[in-house]
Length: 192
Image (tube, rainbow, N blue to C red; front, top):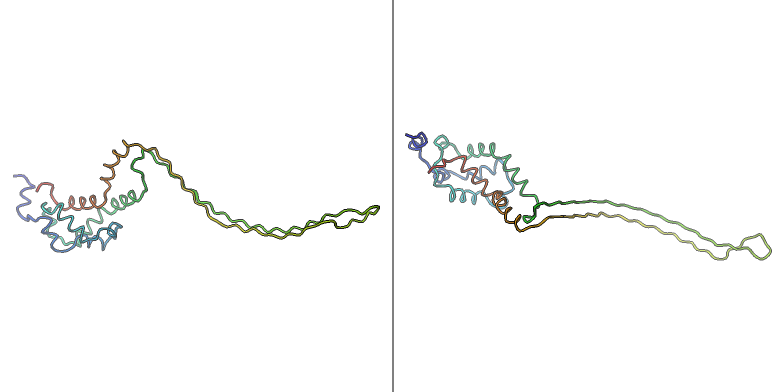
């Protein structure tokens, strides 16, 4: 008899039945508060896990573990992968672009100018060496300029073909689907 099936007959528990003991995703959140918990609470992730994979049978050695023990194992195995996935999803990427180039320049400029000027025009009188003031002006001024300039330029080669091809990439990177699948794959048998 196939070893997988002989294992199942002893402790044949589905993921849905095992998850009745408490919130697996609540235990995972307590260990590693991933950003996706801000949009999808642990209770909702528990429901989605049961709906998607609840009929699968668990590995017999995992049936007796608690949610806290299971969460510790899952975080140890998948934390780095999920962190990288979150990092990739944070990139602002145009799905219709084959190649995207983004430049950001931040310029901080500070100029202080103080000007003082005193102009006097003098002329000489007829038959004398002495100069007398004809016209004149006095001006005092100051310019103080402070400011930041941020310039963002995005250049992309856009095509409908790229947009269509990148849709599958977007689906692969759907973090909620991915993390639920990772957990179910770790805990359950593929054959049910």
